[in-house]
Length: 185
Image (cartoon, rainbow, N blue to C red; front, top):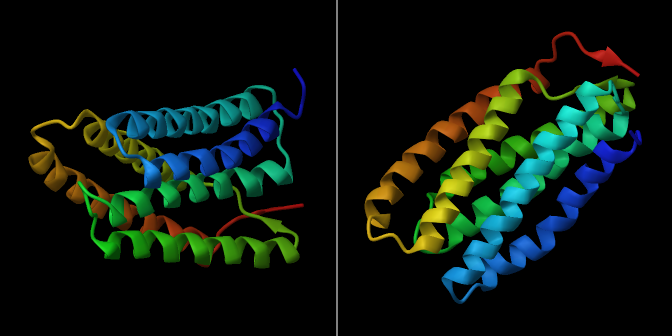
């Protein structure tokens, strides 16, 4: 297997942000939201696949350690912005800002650590956070696209889900602010 495949999948995930964001914010119909859902689902799958391939073939790169979580942050934040700013969910802005601030601080901390030749890969709690974010986004986009009559009931569940996600996201950031054992370059 080509050693660049996991990194190419990560790059592809970053590229998907643009058509995903366009569809999410410009959709005039359920079809547009379904297409946004499809792109987000592909992005989520590439996140799983690049990690799986990298572990299976023992392909670890500093690019992957930094860009993989960054690619996740970009597409998740784009999705959360859509779910926060638009009907039918209008997630509380606090959820979006908790996640945005945590992700921004962690990105800055990664750069500070990188300059000190310390690479901080995503830990298990960070991976759980990512799975919960992506699962919640996929479910919310599906409910939005399907125009389910229960969407107002589902909105409450989605909001509670994302409050839990915001708290896990915040807690998982502690590992980067107070680093434990890290691998040097």
